[in-house]
Structure formats: C-alpha cells, structure tokens
Image (cartoon, rainbow over all chains, first blue to last red; front, top):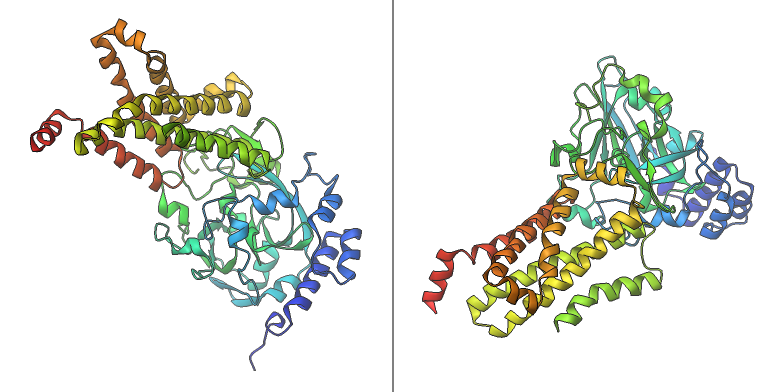
Length: 309
Length: 187
C-alpha cells in the first residue's frame, strides 16, 4: 500500500499549528512556545521581533527583523522585484510536498515534508550575503544536509550534488518568463554539501518557512553568495559531473560554480569588497567566505579561487 | 508638461519615503530610482530632434534643454547618494569601486562629460561659444552611450538596458547625415 504523507490528509490549520509548535520547540524560545501552545497558528512579527531582541550571530551582529527578511529578497520564480516577492508568493502551495533524493546513491528515497521535519531541527544564525552586495543576519531553522545525505548513502562515484526547484509556472509567474532556463538548478561539490554549515532550512525565526523565503524546504550555504541557496527544492541528485546552475547557463562568464563570498574577487559587474548590511547605515567590509573562513577554507586548499569563482 | 513629467519620479520617491513605502534597503531604492529617470530623460531629450525630423513637430525642440537639465539634476542626486550616502565619502572604497566596476567608470565618465554641457546650457554661453557650442554639445551622444553602458553593465537582467540601447542607437542613427538627408528629401 502506498504511504500517504500526513500533510496530504491533515487539515491545513491543524497541520500548520503543529508546524508552529515544532518550529517553536526547535527554536527553544519560551515565548514562541507559549504562543504556539495557545493554539495560534501564527506568531505576530512583533512577538518575533521581541524574542529576537539580543539575538546575534557569532560575530555579535544582531539578526535582521522578521519583517525585513520576509519582505526583501530575490526569488525570480515570482518576480525580479525584491519587494514584490512576498505578495506574489502568498498563495504558493507548499503542502503536500515531496523531495526526491536520487542519483548515485545506494538508497534513493522520496522524503515527504513530514519526514524532513522528523529530523531534529536546529536553529542556525547565519549571515546571508547577496551577490548584489547587501547582506542580512537570519535565524534559520533546519537540518544539516549531511544528515539527509547519510540516509541515502552516496556511492563512491558521486562527486557533486545537484538541486532543483519546483517548476510550477501557474503558481510562480516569474517562471512564465522564457528568458530564464527554468527550473532553477544549483549545485555543490559533495564535500561542500556534507559540510556541517550546509543547512536544509525548513523554518525561520522559529516558525515554518514562509513561501517567499523558499518554503517548504530550501538550501542555506552561508559562505557562498545567496543565489546558491536554492529555494523550494523538489529534487536532490547525486552526480559525477559538475552540475550547470541556472546562472551559469545564463551568464557563464559572470557566475561560476563555486560562488564563494570573496572580497578580493570582483564580480565582472560588482566589486565585492564591501556590502550594505540591511538595517545599518553605511557599508561594512565583506569578509572572506562571508566570515566562515575558519570553517570552510580547508575545502579549497588546492583551488585557485580567482579562476574558480 | 515637461516639468510635471520630469518631477513626477522625484515626487513619488518623496511620497514613498514619507509613507514608509521604501524597502528595507532604502539607499538602493533611492539610487535606482534616481538613475532610471536620469537615463529616460536624457534619451527623451535626444528623441526631440529625430521626432521633429520625422513628423515635423517643431514645438518639441523647445523640450530638449529642460529634459537635458532635469536629467542632469537626477544624475547629481544619483551621484550624491552613491558617494555621500552610500559610501560615506570613503575615497578608498569609492576608488576601488571605480577601478573594479566598469559600470561605475562608465557612469562617472558620463557625468563628467555632462558637467560642461549643463554649465553652458544658457543663452550667454551659447553666444559666447558660437559654433563651438554645437560641437561641445555633441558630447551628449557619447554621454548617453556611456549612460546606457552604465546600466547594461550593472544590470543582472539585461533586457531593459538593451531596449534603452536599441532606442538610443535608433535615435543616433537618425542623425547620421545620410539618413537625415534621405528623410529630408522625402518630406
């Protein structure tokens, strides 16, 4: 008998409130926990902001407001207007959802959203650096990708991981634009994908991820430019050759496979030496590997980062 | 009419700023929203002569100067936002940006070319410069090309700057003596 994911049978209200509860529990935030247990399916931005007061990344920078994070972002499947994403994504169906993990693995598997949420969800406060030279600090909730990959057992010949976003032009108006080779595709080297910083995010601010932020499941690779962190993933494939991302296909001279944050390598269009942190005045210097140099520099020891941008 | 059209984008910026409609990255909004009108107005000022040539709209020739000057006004605002508001006059970072970003270089060059044109956009300068005035003001063609390159090189999606570029090339082509003569013969 075919197994039916519970998101397909649970009424949405109930399902969402359970998600809020799980999210809050994951965030270990007493206030959010109380709110969620009180039966609410929704924690107001004000409450979230209060809880987040004092929350910082490991370098001491405060997290950005829930409002800023969810009203200003790139998501070309909806629109190229960063402020327009939230409105256009409002009716995007994120449940039921299936994520297929296949390719060069011993145990290919389709994960329902519930399966992903059954993993312990960790809160990770990461800097997000957009290639357009603005940045935010975001409290994500999710599971390290290596825990998922371990379950499917990558075979020795697997060298890269290819990710693919859902293709649903009727719900994602930006996908009707033939200028882009949809669906969105991204890739990581297997060792990058296995790195503990690499997160499959399912939540934000201790809550279920909202549609505009890539719900129900997205990648977060904090030492790379934001566009590597692909949203609304339906397929993860282990492969032996370097995947071609959407941006590589569109402009190979501008977007490389690696896309590591690097203040010394200017994008053909943009200098990457400094950035505008949302919510701050002026600019801050951009850090090598977005400040995660200690954790990830070893991955690139034998690589010329100017050539492999 | 030119004044209303030219000041509308500025009015909308103020309205959005006052009513909290700018994004959480307001500097970016302001820079983009002063740059676009600057380019549109510059191209509009270059459209007057061909439109007169094609359709005999003599009245439109009077719009060239205000369109050009309003464009320059937006450019000054645009540059002020970049140099002072965004980069806080940090000359190190600014010079790095000029060196690393070819679009900044193109934009700066366009601005520098337009400064003498704005300064000589009055009757006294016209009389004083005589036929040199015409020659000097041909720099606007180069400045417009640089302005479109500035946009083309900074845009992630090049469709819109390409459209601007095509319009500009058509407007410039219509000024070529061969085409101009053919059009004049026709009428």
